[in-house]
Image (cartoon, rainbow, N blue to C red):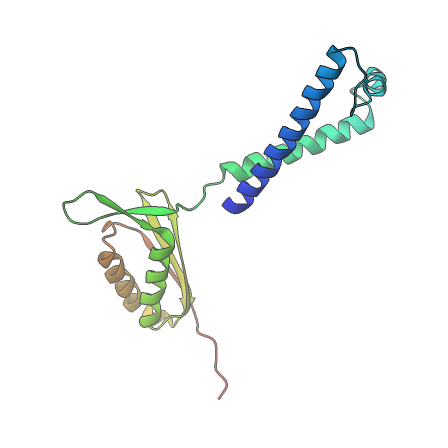
Length: 176
């Protein structure tokens, strides 16, 4: 989603730049006594004078604009997973490690413990984060998987109180 945000921000910036330049050129032309080059100001002015707030097209455009703006606001306020999480290596200063690296290492540890198709997610804030693991394994393997994940998190110098949530579904049946 960050890439999408950057692309949309770039497009919005370009649109605002072009519109701003067009307005500046139009203003300069009108100030020097010329006619507008891009915008038919006479027709716009006449149509805006006839427009009422109760008109259907105006209300429709206002509602669509408000809904799009509200949707963008909600998307921006959504908590995104951190790019990096903090770990502590002994008595030294806290270290920062890529979230995706932690997820890969947890998935590898779970696979070594017998989990099929492990998927992990690190969520929370960089200083206070949690791990969620899903995969296919028998329920009696849960303690072994949790122990393997805890050992891997300890190798990564994760805080010892890092919450770990494990959801195991029965492995897929194999046809012989």
